[in-house]
Length: 384
Image 1 (cartoon, one colour):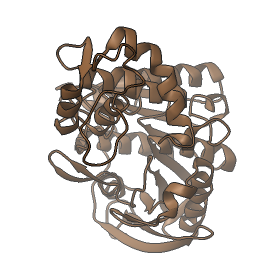
Image 2 (cartoon, rainbow, N blue to C red):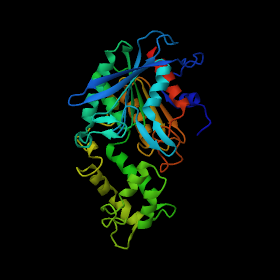
Image 3 (cartoon, rainbow, N blue to C red):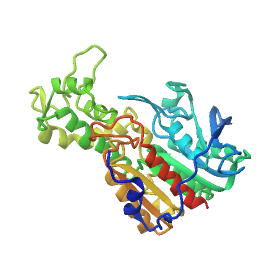
Image 4 (cartoon, rainbow, N blue to C red):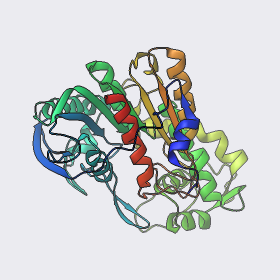
């Protein structure tokens, strides 16, 4: 991880917003209180939790500024429990604990149809929709704002991955959101994002050191290797679909000369758009983001975001490419509605803001406490 202090990174990469005054100390750290509650989402009751400062602590008796956490793609529980190479990571639980101890009422919840970590109703995959998830997030926020610990006049949304698009859409629809924190923002189009999974992450991972061709042995090694989820998913587009137990082979659709291996330049790259087409088809795993089925990306909504925005981006993020954060920043400045945008690119970090040595190594690792502490500084400065 980089040695440059996080506060220096924030100052260097801030655009159009004043730095936190040097004389202001970091937010005090106090004890927290947990308040479980349930939300009727319509056809599903979601379990949720509010974590807020202890009233006897350094942040007064409340109510406190509210931060709603909106998670990414997949059937995530409220903690966003992830299995990483170094053990289990509870991404949202960590974020909630850090922010609540520093003066915020933080809300997180099981996604629709999710029961617990690793347990969810089969309807999740059949009925998921970012449009529905946006409505769900609004219902959770309304339920939280009815609790006495939550200050209805100071509301922030913290989105991660898919949750950045959902959170931005929610902020536009509501009009009462005072700031957005976007971790791993969907800055490129949905199609460009998925293409990057294959072209920039999966194909180089499968090709390995050779970099020019992919064999069945390469694909077996990729599937068994130490690559991250996106690397393995992207590599799988080069495999022949088959049943469990069958040997792994290169895709016969890509292998035009039928020599049992794929030339990256002549056989894989020309078919990238066709692979993305399949991913967005009803049979593909990104059909949720197909045209007219999803909320816009954050960049597509940039001109409508009339609140300060903090963009947190790992430069080795395999899920949402780092160049998308720059595209989003430029769109927010150009759009004119956003009063202040701060982009923080974190060297050597992946999609969870934890360490990642490369795009292929991007896996579930816990973020450094320092970056979350600076999120608290940014929120504190905008909720005063």
